Image 1 (spheres, rainbow, N blue to C red):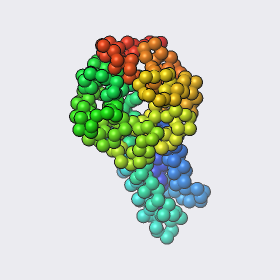
Image 2 (cartoon, rainbow, N blue to C red; image 1 turned 120 degrees about the vertical axis):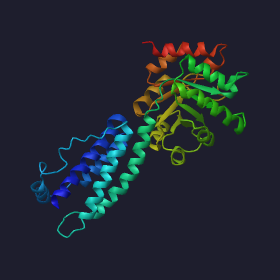
Image 3 (cartoon, rainbow, N blue to C red; image 1 turned 135 degrees about the vertical axis):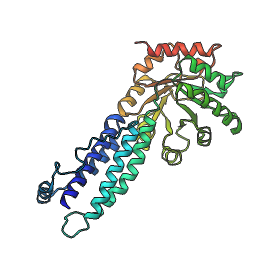
Image 4 (cartoon, rainbow, N blue to C red; image 1 turned 180 degrees about the vertical axis):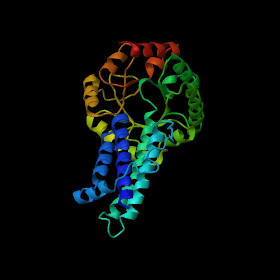
Length: 339
């Protein structure tokens, strides 16, 4: 019996440590990493006498499956997370049941609480790992209905993708929902061959109906925590910010990336707060999320903005107002790649 308990405690600790390392080294998520570390430490056997009992019962060589040559391959990081979360919950269930025996000096309620906590952690971790693969970096082109003039949204998107866009966002504050959904579905299809993320601005219903990769929210839109509860776990959430406090709040609320701006004066919005490069640098030092800089960015200043700490630059007018969208996109993309 004590050999069984020892094996499950070891399996539990190993599984938790793996999940913790995914949160720490792959996701760079200090909060989730700390939560897993605390849980792992809380579940360790702390009494020396009982630890000695477990060590005495240990018999690795006598374990009939210890040296099995069977290897279960993993398809990706999410597969590893799923397998190890299951390993942890199974161990917790075994420990919970055997802790109910009179001669076992362990608290079954502690293992039960931990098991339900892992169910929540697995969902959060799995969602973050899935979204982590949808990288927000490089040239973030916003297809803005008002800025397009007579240009077609879908064809403009295709031209931007051919020019080197890394992310596409659809922003429509003038059209009706039916038209927007039709455009969104076509733009999503255009993004699939290149594998670039497609983001909807403001409208959660359109994002879900069109199968978009994410939703971008402003400070006066649906709060990030509410959007996270309603969206499928594989969908990105971006949040517009202008201050360090807003950026930190967006990170704490569960945003996957933040937009910071306006970096320079811009004609794309009637009233904006110009934050400048210095504010961008301060926000970069405050948060670990990817940063999309926005506002007045063009081929002449895009590289400067990246050097100041942005992971991506969002561009509207410098591309959409051009007679040759593909060429204008390519020009900025080239500047971003230059060192």
